[in-house]
Amino acid sequence: MSSHPYRALCLVLALAASAPLAACAPGGAGAPLEERILGQWGDDDGASPWLRFDADGTLTGSDGCNRMGGSWKVEDGRVQTPGVFSTKMWCEDYTEWMADLASLEVDGDELIVFDADGERLGTLSRS
Image (tube, rainbow, N blue to C red; front, side):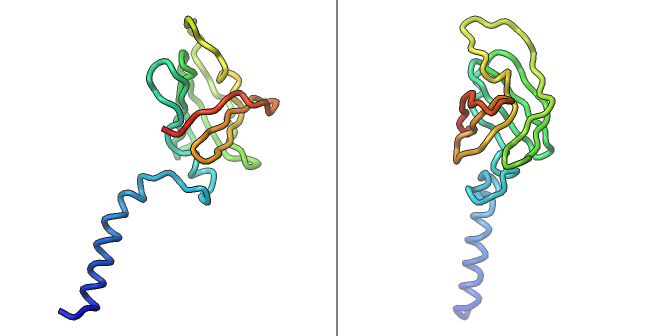
């Protein structure tokens, strides 16, 4: 066996082994915002806020008490969330900061949440 086919085989095997890892990783810093936003932000532990963004433009989540849903789109360098809806349950020891969610920015592994006036409401970390 000559060294050229052997090197080619090693390269193919190395690439094949790394492909599943690349497919699971969220878009890197240079990726478009439409890719970087995908996935879950925050922990779905039943008491903490979290949001999940799917490639079909839907979002689901919770503010730590109430379930949320709706759609998302990228506009003017931010993720816009038109028509987000939420249940309105009463919860003890609960801070309702995501109810005014209007737009979001991705900064590395942090999702920054803004209201309609552009005021920062809080952040969620990538899960």
